[in-house]
Amino acid sequence: MEKINVLIVDDRAENIIALEALLDREDIEMITTTNPNEALRLCWEMDIAIALVDVQMPEMDGFELVEILKSNPRTKEILIIFVTAISKETKYVVRGLNTGAVDYLYKPLDPFVTSAKVDSFIQLVRNEREIKRKNLELEAYQKELIKAKEQAEQGKRIKENFLANMSHEIRTPINGIIGLASLLKKTTLSPDQEEMIRLLEISSDSLLGVINDILDLSKIESGKFKINRAETDVIKTCTDVTNLLRIRAMEKKLDLITDYDPALPNLIMADSLRLNQILMNLIGNAIKFTASGSVTLKVEALDKKGNNIQVRFSVIDTGIGIAKDKIDKIFETFEQADEQTTIKFGGTGLGLSIVKNLAELKGGILEVFSEEGHGSTFCFTNWYEVIKTPEKMINVNKPVLESFEGVNVLVAEDNPINKFLIIRVLKEWGVKPDVVENGKEALELLTKNDYDIILMDTFMPVMNGLEAIKLIREGYAPGKEGIPIITFSAAVMESDKQTAIEAGANDVVSKPFEVDVLHEKISRFVKASKGSPTY
Image 1 (cartoon, rainbow, N blue to C red):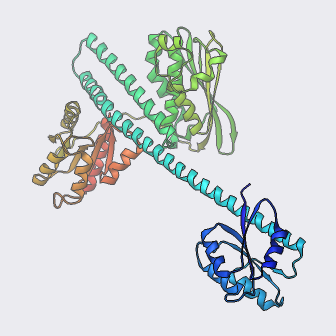
Image 2: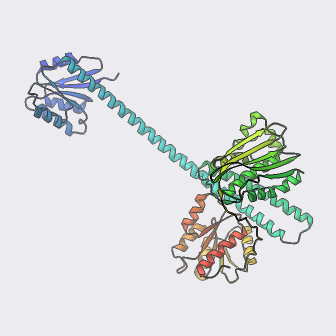
Image 3: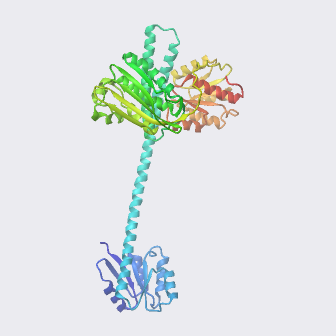
């Protein structure tokens, strides 16, 4: 055990000898002096924890000695106990305590009281030193935690930047492939060519699905995934999903059956995009792992409380089934039931992991019931708020997109395929755009010509879109600071979209873009800028 240094200061040697005898113990190192000035030196040079100081001494009394000790940062923490033979009047006690003493001992000393008090203060010193030691350890741990946190945040930023770049680099050419396939479908094709275009679309959609799965999983892990609830026609959502997957089922000669509970409401508050994603994964998996028979989507109302309804979506197949000891494994990232499943059926093993995460984020429950060789049933159950409305959803034909004739558009895009697609789409709307390949060229044209709107790619060589937007908003082309700007971005992270808005973009269109979405945005911003009717 560490020894505690105790200083005894008394001008009479016999008093010191008496105190030493009284306090003699293994855990105390006693230092003594009859000279107050020597006491100051000892306190300065040694780690004195407790000082027993006589009040009446020549040249410098105890009060003066303690005042000097307490005024020095190096010695102010020493616990002072006054030892006095003078009157016990209150004024002396008050003066001593005001000077900084923690207690008084009165001569003649009571051995039991003296020993007990010194014991208590020694324990106090040990406790304080233990607290200081723990605080130093905590400070060291805190520094390590801060360092680890900074490293984790840096790793997170690197990961997000990588995903954003990967998203852009892969989604941009996929956007071109999907767009070109769409344009080719509008031309005169032979049956063989139509089949090739169909296969091209399936391959592109499959690749895009894998990329979206990876990005979704990353957003879920980083806590940036949001559930956006809105009025949703649950039967229409389910029908849309089954219609999309029906061709795949027909190719395998499977029956794709839907079974809707009559008690289901017309509208509920739900995130239709994520519900669609869950059902697409579950039904798509069921079709993949079923060689013959059927896949059934059963939607039923289980319970109702007030204005809320509990709905269960069950996907039932007659496929290969899952062994009991492999059921938990299928929900792990990049995992499938076994290696032979991956070899025979392919896939990344991301689908069910994302479904599980989405189910938990939506506050629902995901269950699986399966028997190897006899099919599987996946059930997603959740509570939804019912939207009370007597009106039925009315399906209307998609309106023809109107012309933008007379609208001047500047396009900044460096990818040749995307450039071709945008020009082709704009020409169909009566627009002959000016096209450049980077932000610098866009700025140069903007200073020379007048435009109603700018379509700007985010990532470009020489000068990227964000830099160009900032310069435009800062007045690079005087009088044109407020021109509407829509950015194209293959990055899908929310932070990337927010960065574009903060740079000054009016809106962001994700690649691959939907033609009607782009048309609506151009129409809205041009209308606001010109104060004219919608095109």
